[in-house]
View: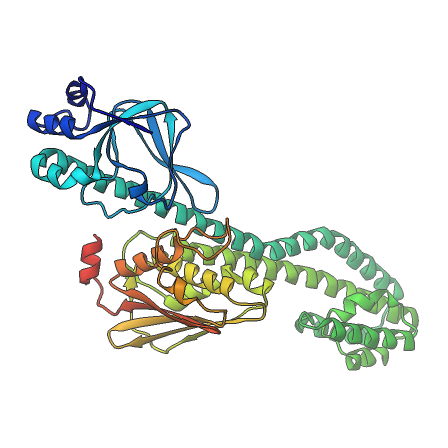
Length: 483
């Protein structure tokens, strides 16, 4: 941008300005005498994120024409946060603590701004109280805009974590339901065919009783769903050997191997049946067990999906009003781990939760605390190596309820420890972190009158969330300030 002396008509242009036009004449005259005209071209790069303000010769920028905008990249590409055009005021404002650019600023349309340099601020505060008050209000409004944008971005990131976790966790049970629905019609047809074949074999009453006993043993005992591949292979070999020894058809092998029916139960059946009747009985029992197994698989998968949806609703408190109420800390932590389970399994990370018995009640906004757990546990998962571990403990300590999240990752370097709560600071790669998670977690906890502390060294990082133990309806000083 190019700086020029004040033009002759600057007072009249300031008088027509939407924001400061009603200021006293003497103050407008002071601005006109102490400011500079700044011109910029469309597409011009005006400031880079992190660039020190002293390098830019900026100050209060009273927009006369054109349009400039501030963009921020929080991991998902640059996004416009705020823009200024004729009638607005931008730049550095009195009493602002900003020392570096908080984003990239571009000129989106050619125009002019009237600049009051920063070195003139002390005199401006003294000579122009009305204008200064206006600038301070603008600064507060701008801070709210930036904060709102930050919160919204972090909410989108949290929503992305929840969505990704839910998609991963629901994939297997949804696939199981689809698989069972596809196979079940064929299994039912096989069961009908086996029933007709058994009826044609004409079993006696005594044989039917023996068949019922093994069918009940098959139906009433859980299927061997937890067998390792080696154990499954051994069981199939055992059942196949029995079938071959008794001259039975191997078509029932897979179905029988998937049940808890024992070789002893098969021996009992063989004492009553033989030949085609034994084959028909085994086919009928196996077909019935297959149908029951598919139905059980669908039931387990549907229950898993229901549990995941319920966990998601509890995490977000989507059915509850946004008011403070007694919260289930353990439930919120376990729901968070459930949603992040896919990420833990991908790295073979173990979760451990220890909760002290008879916890005192904590009144809080459950959805906000769950966002804290999500941020801390997600960061811990990123920090640990494959095969690592994360432990969570919850217990009262004096006037606080303390939640500790400990991981055995590489730790946080001393250089980074000083900055981990700074907005937009992240040690993760591009696109993997906004740099807002810990800042927002701390703000959420402080909004409840608590605090977050941490200790870190190689092999052990601990974050401590301290929440006040209080009676329902009481408000701590920190909460009063946050309002």
